Length: 280
Image (cartoon, rainbow, N blue to C red; front, side, top):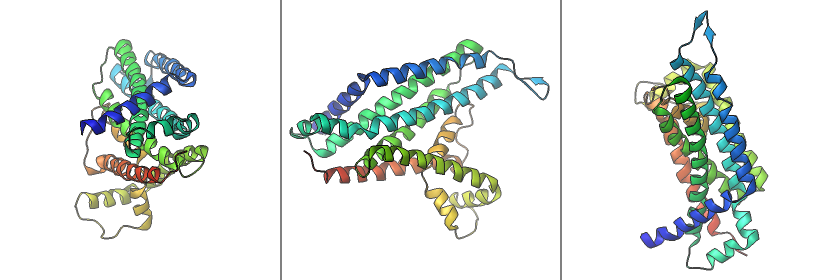
């Protein structure tokens, strides 16, 4: 087992360091850090709702949640950009054929690439989220322990994006793979909006998942809603830990199981598809 993990760890390390050395990565990171620091002004403002001034805890919760979602979305976009060209760069530079000419299996190579890209994206997001956490702590003297936990949970979305884009990049042009992932997020947002308008119907359906009394059959629209990747649902579930809401029944935790299942299925398909690739 240790011998099998060593090549995966080495490839992951090489992938991570190779991306960090790229000038584009450094520029994107610095730009994101600058924009995150601009959030500091939002903590220092005075907000009034219905004639009443908001207290520091409310301001910290609202602003931090908004910053959390913004950072998570931007990081998913960047992780898709990193992943869509990962195989092509190795193939064009000859690194792919060099690595696979050694006693390293294709499975180890793919797992190493995916792990490296995921760790890179997760660390990128955690650093930005940590800056937001520190700004809130310094500006308002309020700490939110759930903020880091929310970031760790949201990293599962990054794993989904990395695995999905790596798989799609083997099946279609890279830019199409990128747009396909963006389309998944947009469709998920539309589905959430449609179902929000029919909240009572959703509530009845979710009780079915909890084993309670509900209508026996799901409509095709509801099946499509639950089967679709819950990227934004997972992000909302993660953000619920910021203000201490956390677990609120099977309805709130369902996106977690949805994304985990997709990661396993897409990961298996990625290993199978790369196994059929012709290495030049």
